[in-house]
Length: 116
Length: 317
Image (cartoon, rainbow over all chains, first blue to last red; front, side, top):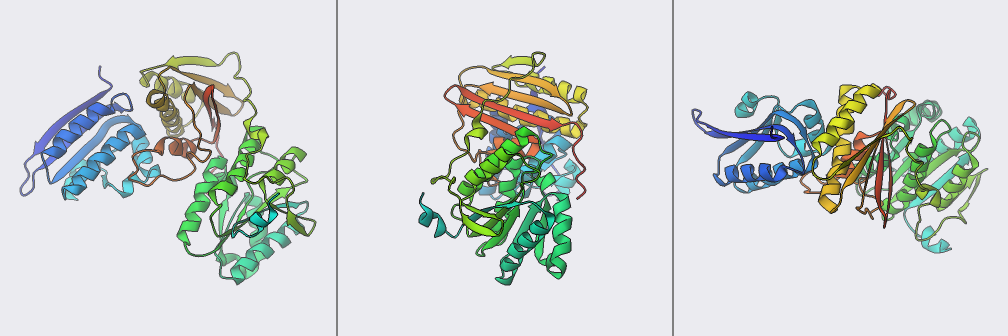
């Protein structure tokens, strides 16, 4: 079984379509390049909103965080928004300790992220 | 001794040796009140019993001083400098006063070594700061070796009412040699594991031992992240394998990572990285997550020993 799995969905809502990248498993220095490739490919499609669903992510280290921060910079430059949804507590705590949660909006659920 | 070079600086770091509570209350409140009279914001991070003492002694001035429980913010002494840096940033442009008491008799030898290192690093981290720092030392409750090291880590000393420069303070500032003594060897029944590409197994082992030790799920997760961050550095910065060692001590679990990497910045992990920084988060997280961190790094490699208490003191302060 892969340590890290990702899946991408584009959701056509009334108004703005948005992209959801589901990340599951454990994201660390050994596999963050594959996460980077997935996120870069989606950012390149210039969605207005990109939501990373973290509900299936059991672990994330600072290498994976840096990949997300990079994606956030790229989205910022395009004038579009990156959001994180449903982090489990250990991941949420890491986002707080690094203050990444002050840079990237973190929502309790994908539903809240799409409403926000 | 370049006394004049030290004396002319806006940064003052004073070791205050006291024997009685009366002496403590009089000197520390005097120090705080001098600052308040000059409009300088003041922070006092001292053990809980000393907070109570100062609150009583300060009377109406108590509202003007910010207090922090040193047993909490300084449990890992590496967390004190970023806390004080945050205070100075919050009051940017103003001279600030800080009372910091990181050493007390009930602390373990390892904690006291790290408190001494912290004191030495204050001289580096705040060299350019406009700050008055007073560090009380309980000469009745602390071993003479701790007091001697305090004389090495403080450019100025205050005791028995007398003020002066410390003849033992070196310029440029040095970390006392007691801080770099070899770490005691792990016990023979410690668990060893080597890793080169797979950190998932490292995390699984830490999680299992953390739970066996009785850590709560949240604190077990903290330790898993800390160890994984250090082990990730092995993969990032070295070409060779790393070793994870785990053992149990009375009241705590200890995880150690050794690899061939080298860490040369003594302040690594003691400055909060900017939120959008694409590096520097690893050791920052380790220090924020663990109750005590011991680090030794030289040509032969780096050893980082992370301690987690099974029952941390309550944090409701």
